[in-house]
Length: 118
Image 1 (cartoon, rainbow, N blue to C red):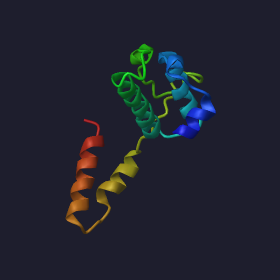
Image 2 (image 1 turned 30 degrees about the vertical axis):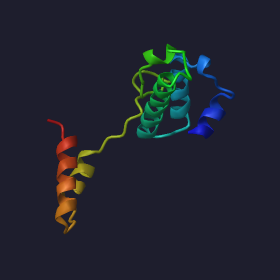
Image 3 (image 1 turned 90 degrees about the vertical axis):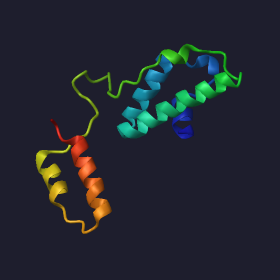
Image 4 (image 1 turned 120 degrees about the vertical axis):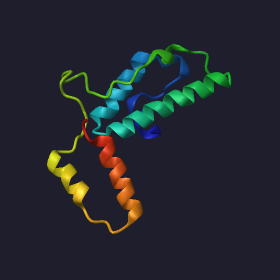
């Protein structure tokens, strides 16, 4: 994460951080081709760190608190969302894949139940 932060903007001070800068950093990460999960966790970790720094008295800038994650690249269009989905055939192949272990079967069943459209 430090690599991406320093590549995005260096030096970076608490006073510089606001919801607009965080949104631009999120788009920067998406533009790097990073997965939604990585971007989501990274942005969540940054907000957690900022909250911790504020609680400890290191940060007095609260402008970051209005930031909401976007999960898509606004530079292309609102239609192009960076999501991955299984096709029905892929889901079917997961459902019938033989594992021969009860724990893996249960994990697979929970996953399939969670992703099946109702």
